[in-house]
Length: 298
Image 1 (cartoon, one colour):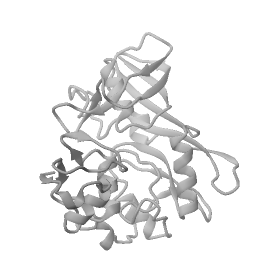
Image 2: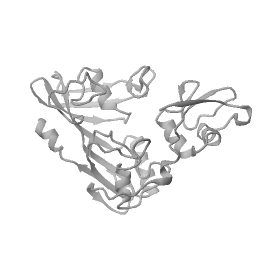
Image 3: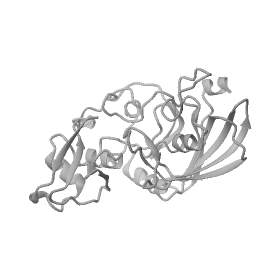
Image 4: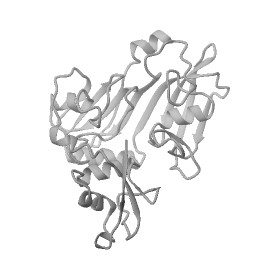
């Protein structure tokens, strides 16, 4: 995505970065700016910032040129089949298939999970209209359990549980190489790759990322593991496992590209998700069976 650089003038000194961007860039709403800030696509003097950061006169703000002209303005409800594990008035729990993007963005304005859900029910707008209902995400190629909020109460409640690390996220992955330890903890900070902004990496100035893993089965040169995420950084499992020399099979971004099984997506599956119901407070857990291709490769 191309960027433009804007120098903060005296009249905008002291404005919050999200307000500044929406004020000076055409077709850039505040909610869209907040989304890009969280994805670290908007920088001040080359540095990642928080939504609450205030700009100062003379600073250079880097902003994506494509403001996506409010994808939200033309969100299309589509009749796309989805595997619903649970539904009530507040939440929807889905078994996301591979090759499905979670929410619309440049190049993916249709065919996403949001388009599919809007064809069946309403969604919250707590996170702005750009990503209705989306409390957390899974990569395009990652399958498994995902919870979506139907209203703002549910969205805020579950988002706070995730932020406070009160949810349970269990993944199953097939990784290259034999892991000697039966279980382990990877506690390494993750941030944007220093030279490739499309990738994440273990970097000293990154955010804390905590991954627990347990070996389920050792195979001929490969290991099947169960992973529990204690934090939710972008590409966390893929980055951590690649960093310790055991990249996820089928991951063409964080591995050497070897794919002896001909996997059509990465062998990473969100197996279990646990959280308290936003209205009743009842603890709920949902599981999604391994995809057929995953089982076949196993």
